[in-house]
Image (tube, rainbow, N blue to C red; front, side):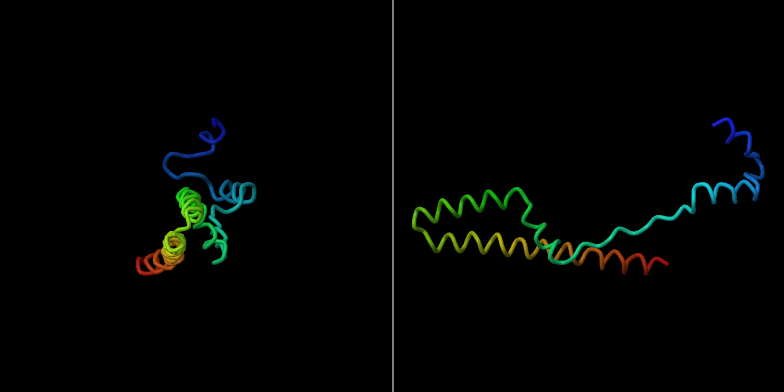
Length: 104
């Protein structure tokens, strides 16, 4: 830390030579964008919700009680909920990208 303070001038900052040396030593200060997940992986991630195993267990119990219509209703609700979560997650990067472009 003392070397850093010694190399800096309070009024001018670091010299061009010091900036070049730091650039070669540490590299440029650029963030790399995260790799985007595929659509299938994003859809399957919707089933990781803690409520999905619970409703799946409920549908199995209802199946053993011979309430087949209710089983299909429960599974349809889980599937539709996952589709809505996927749709929302898929649209979010597009909205944020368009928002960032509008701010320029």
